[in-house]
Length: 523
Image 1 (cartoon, rainbow, N blue to C red):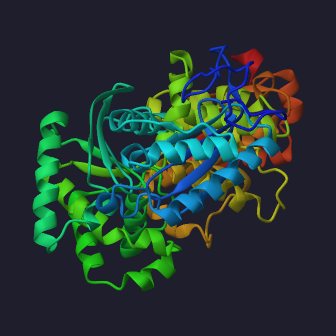
Image 2: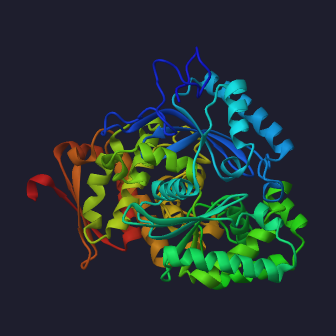
Image 3: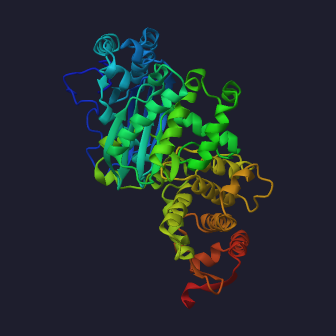
């Protein structure tokens, strides 16, 4: 619902009307590329989180992100009611979020509640209290809709995702099939850790219960050796602990990928490890870590019953799914990586728009490159000048950090490191002794060499001409002959000074090529 200076965020008003949980349509113009601030609150069984999106429409940035571990659904399976302390904490959080939304002038501001509120006998009373005391209309969605929105969130950050989304909350776990940019069959199960706490007996009894529920769900979802995409806080903690066990060098959770065998090793390790000590090493809250052992039990049976080929982590879920719901097909079809890079260039580069010209200038070097590699090259060109304000001594590392740790969708971990390494070489010839070196092991030696060559190509092209390098010259690449030719225009001959010559020579060395300089008139 709309938030303005006159009425509480989320409250109905005469101008906005009741648009339902998704708010007033955001994208009246399908060609829109930028997104004004949009707020979403997810009232879950364990946490209440407010996220404010901004930036590129297809790949939004997180302008604001705050989470309170309220435990609203703790004890629900036993009492049938919301946890009293959880209600008080959730209400206090929602009051704060309503005031924050007003201060940020957010419109629309959508508030969605999931399993705990929909299943509790006092859920309707809680909704009324929230509306009365905060002005926020709490939209309670059913399990099927929760599964659909979580799956759409995965598609926002991972357009080519195909397999089964598994979203775990405090009181429920949703499964949904995705592929071809669409959400298919979906089912909601009572396998949240709060629910499992209420099952009497030992671990064997819980295992039998989990197996029974999962096997029934599998008949609906029909697993076929698919990838499983994990969504939810408990899964993210387990993935972070998997990184800890493996000494994995990049602690970005989105698109972190695990094998079933490797993850089972981690689950065994966690069963025999002091979780309190691990909590300190990974920065996990006590409330979240308390649920990890039960989440591990569920994940072990997911591997056994669904037999996934790979297990991947999505940092995007229901909140992003609400935004994806609003996107017209034309917007959904855009590449989130390129859209994010384009928005970054627009707001942070010295000469917005130059990245496209640089890419076109360098394209002759990549006539045989795959489409996946070309999109990384294009993203690098768009980002090549976005850290120019950093101190020159740290600019190369700032480029690397920005690429590898930024909130970028549609980018796996090797892709992040390739992009970061190319940008590092945009500003620095050598990577020897870099503190980033442990991350280089995520790439093959061939990929490292290609990233270096791309960086040196950008290093040359970016300073060859400050307007448009195509007006100064043209690159020609004969890969089999290893011959790199630069055809110069009359203007380009004047621009091809000592520094430009040195950078062109460095590019040729990275390509293991001989060079040839000709005038455009000779071509």
